[in-house]
Amino acid sequence: MALTGRAGLLALLGALVVGFLLPSGSGLLLATGVVLALVTVDVALAGSVRGLVLDRSGDTAVRLGEKATVTLSIANPSGRRVHGRLRDAWPPSAGAREQRHALDVPPGERRQVTTTLRPTRRGDRFAHRVTLRAVGPLGVAARQGSHEVPWRVRVLPPFTSRKHLPSKLARLRELDGRASVMIRGQGTEFDSLREYVEGDDVRSIDWRASARASDVMVRTWRPERDRRILIVLDTGRTSAGRVGDAPRLDAAMDAALLLAALASRAGDRVDLLAYDRRVRARVEGVSATELLPTLVEAMAPLEPALVEPDFAGMVSTVLGRTSRQSLVVLLTGLDAAPVQEGLLPSLPMLVRRHRVVVASVGDPRVEAMARARGDAEAVYDAAAAERFRADRARIAELLSRRGVEVVDGSPEELPPMLADRYLALKAAGRL
Image 1 (tube, helix red, strand yellow):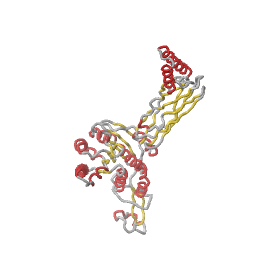
Image 2 (tube, rainbow, N blue to C red):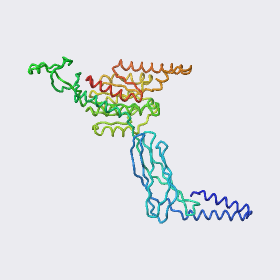
Image 3 (tube, rainbow, N blue to C red):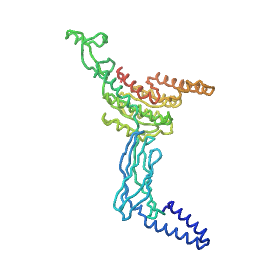
């Protein structure tokens, strides 16, 4: 049961009557009795909220930053009208604009209310409960109750780097021989023969074909297809660090999605592994048409684990998944301690069997701090930023000496940089 503002006004009116007209104990009892009687009658005549039948429909998935709508349907099988208010409770990160709605459901009919969500965080967002308040005909009191009406909206990674995909695909078409540019590189596949033109690599001349033809013939090449790309997301402690408004893990996901979209268009097989001290997500053997939906579905519920990543276990898991030479792209941090103590000792086994790229999300605020010179505090900040940059450069150099390709960029720069590194490896025939 709940009381409305009218109940308070009635109580105030009763107090005035007692104070000015019946200033006695009997007057107090009379005024109280009248208010209680009105409240009791109003509650008895109010529609039943327990008997309402509720169900949901609407969006079950939405990209971060976009809008979703969830419709709540309320059916009234009873013989009394249910009039009042309804609260559809969602967590704050679901971004529900209007959680309170007017409610008016005649007997035997059904009404719908719609809640618009604009989530502010990636992951699963669950509806909490629906609380209904049915006000009596006098408007003095109401029946109140709650219903559990489960619903989940999965908030997917936004994939903001997809704006770079057309330009990378144009470059891929050149490398793949669909445009006029042909390349020569170790490990590439033979494509066709054509006449020699000035500037061609003389190593591409096919002397046997030239002897049979009336001109010098050269071989053209295209990058090999059906290579395996394994993207490994480090979901350990360092991935929880925030760069701007989002964790590093979100920026790493964005880079992984652009690389996956590009590599799948190139005819390569793309798999995903998310790992900290155990496997958090895995995508394997998915066709090119289903790859991106499957990846975003697998990435959506991932959250950073506040533990040090087990790089030895990660490398062991990678080696156990495939014996075929692959491109392993590890999206992790370049923090000195985790890399030196965890990753570097485990790298030799991985580098012997696979080509390895380490991609890391940098913080643009560090670059801004390094340029600051306004006052003494800014100079100290700049010195700390330079020290931080020097440590990252040293770690990158250590990785490069062990045969690892290193890509380091801000959240906006990393996805196209990683895509360019993939295309460069493909152009050089190193996949």
